[in-house]
Image (cartoon, rainbow over all chains, first blue to last red; front, side, top):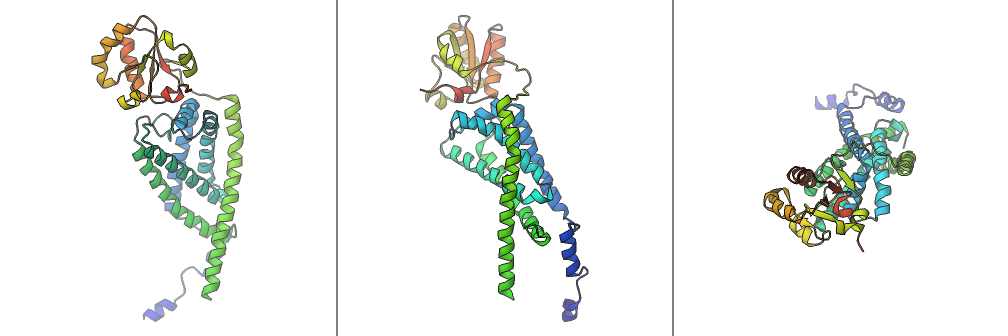
Length: 169
Length: 150
């Protein structure tokens, strides 16, 4: 019986699966949309808060004492737009993998900066959400960033697989 | 058969990384234009501030005519502070307000925390504005992080 079952064809033939994937008509699971929505809304919120007060973003970055004032100034201008690109890219099929890489890269950057602040016992606000997080603990932000990073892994796996089937990769 | 599929999956992974890197580079390029515009035009959509801000450089140059209030933790205060600054935090405010009154000669009062948007600095500023009968209370732009160092 078990042997018979295992020999039964799958409800959707393999060729059809490939055709669906190639044409991009394959169904994307709901959890992928949910994860992407969560990540892009977080990045867009963070970017909006940084753009609302560029000077506060600048001093937040400078507080880490990792960059000169000039370099912090440039980073304060660039960071929100890179976050916007990472958020919007998640919804453009041809840019998804890049957006995942960019978003995860940003989060690794934040984690490294927060770890260095912790190591040097700096009493600072992380600046992740502009001035809205004044007084927030560096340790809490670190955990939040690591959780967000964990969300990127399954969507990377999903999109890397489907882009391979479509021939994007 | 197995080695073929393994190498196929390896190729797929390498391909995914390659296209991801290219796409990320493209996204960074897309972010470059608004970045340059933000830097050049110095966009700021801030709402009118509750307290006037004084640039750190101006405060540093005019330090003799200002009364500084440092709202950071005691250890941070001890590791460095503005000339003649008084260490006041919201929890020590009631005991320190008398000292501020004694030292205040009508000069501008500059309050600072660790960086911009210090909640403690705002709390102390609000209390001082009320208790010192609305003197000119300023917040140090960028907080202590922006204070010029030698």
